[in-house]
Length: 214
Image (cartoon, rainbow, N blue to C red; front, top):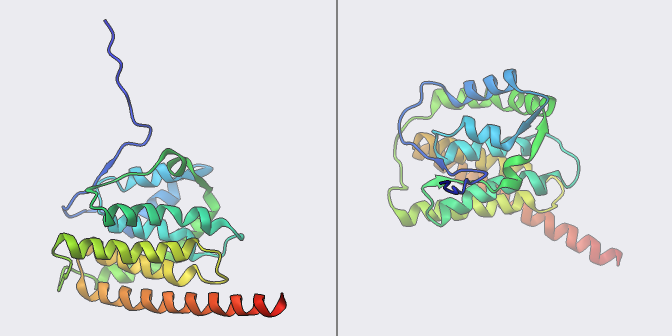
């Protein structure tokens, strides 16, 4: 007698609240050293399987912090939006659809991402610590998710030079969320608001230019 068991291609990833002996910067550097020819989002998610939503935000913001071909941010910004959306609607586990989990980048690109962000992340790890954490309720946590979701959407939109600032803000917010650091959260919020303002101004300027041309 056989029993049919349905297996999800991309299982939900539990979010833990315990301390981690391996710092996020060390984990990323290890992934960069041991990566194959291509690095799939699934591999990154598996490496982060016992960490918070914040760690996923940090890692998924990395591709947007280096120069990429036009249109690449539409795909690379989606994981951030998915994670932020799950915070917004109250998920307790991180989940990625199969199409996103299977998306991969070449090893050299991933190593450039890690090399660019690792020094900044190491400095942040020396500074951030649990303090003054304001997101102590469901409503505040979901408002945080909404703010990050808006920033992720800005990253996805084809705004000239508009994806780097919000992605940087999401990285800061991700570090803050991981360590429960309210001071770091405030810095990320300010950077995020400035990024949204700059993106809005660029979009308005581009729209005005197009209207003049046509």
